[in-house]
Length: 241
Image 1 (cartoon, one colour):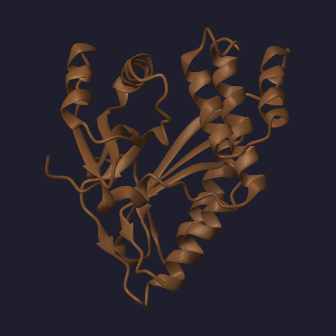
Image 2 (tube, one colour):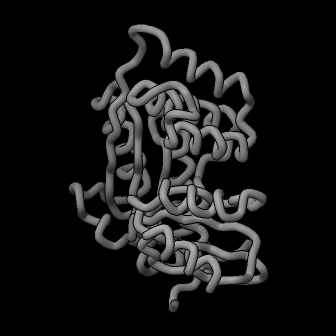
């Protein structure tokens, strides 16, 4: 169908690397989803999906349980979602998603990441149009036609489906996440969804040259160190070391 998963798989991988950051990220997301819906995974598909994803990222059960228990209580933090867009080192396009209980602190932290690396923070919508907001489901398999027929029967609007080295990757609009996931799990209960998420996939990529690479790595590391940053998406291709 034209797009190469190999060329854009970097956008599916999250930038968080430290365990404490990962635990904090999931704890906050689990709390918000449970708080805004119901704290029962069986009755809250979004919560159930996030718990499964957290487990794949090796988040301990006690971290997951604590976040859900916290959402069941009274009071607690009032987190809001915020998104920032701009241009990073090497003129790459960047989207930064945050959850925060202090928007002034968050915008200050994110702005510092841009200004201290010669990057440019732009207005809302400045780069989002350069990405597709997609459901991405990836699992072992090789029968594209069977999966495509399944999605059509489930009334899922498929954007793309690719097969490479025994791995099938399905791309669909972000709004189709739960419907597509449920259809796959019901038809193939034994299938392990190795990638199961809603993400921003760049429509085109830019390779980061040698001179820009150190600053790009600093930029990403600084964003990762921001407590409120949840996800970072970009269209940069980093040369193999």
